[in-house]
Length: 223
Image 1 (cartoon, rainbow, N blue to C red):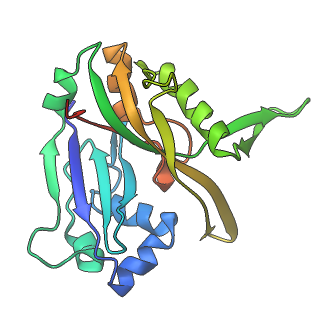
Image 2 (image 1 turned 120 degrees about the horizontal axis):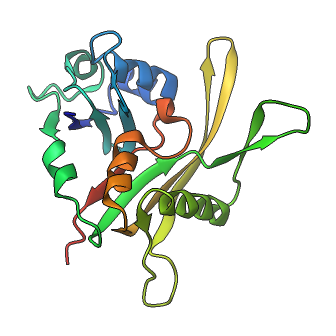
């Protein structure tokens, strides 16, 4: 399976970029438009994306993991910097193959921490959002540990992860309003099961993946 990791710098000063960033529904459509119809998923791999915001107002970056290399021409016309480089894509497979159990990494993941609650007599559950930062962090830790990772404690005995950004997104989807509580989690993790970890990096964590949630990315710890 071939996978690509892509980074696209968003020019937030452009009017079309502002419109895209205001709605995960529109941004999702723009991401999918970077692939031929019906080819944004292959087998167990699907296209995942995340919008990262930096400390500066103009600093916004789209991160995409996909089974095909995206053609970012249209997205660049709408929200790029017109520098001649619409984005940077790299083969993700060598990185995934090189992962080893016991290795430590810095990570980032934006998630939609919700739990399905099923009423008696109903075949379908209703998703209930985790409200506080502590609840959202515990939700994330529980799911991370099921997917081949553990969070080592810091010197004070606290798990080495924290919620660094929280917001409630509201946007229109057809004739209804969608409300999503999202949380960005950053920290240090350790791989305990490399096969499960690779599956999490490819398949994402939690719901609302079509709206920019679930993509887990790793980076060297710098030690």
